[in-house]
Image 1 (cartoon, helix red, strand yellow):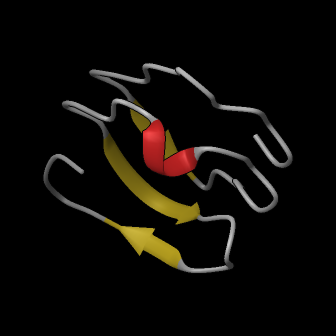
Image 2 (image 1 turned 90 degrees about the horizontal axis):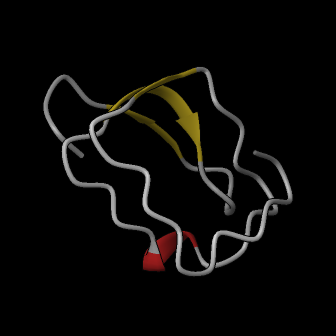
Length: 54
């Protein structure tokens, strides 16, 4: 998902593992309801691991 345009995206009820979102646009606008992440790298380089919903 590196460099992806996520404007108006809905990524719900999903499990993301080792996903690189560096350079992705509009990440803060995404509907992440029910999504669990492990090894998610955000556009600013921040890595997130979450055992619960993000």
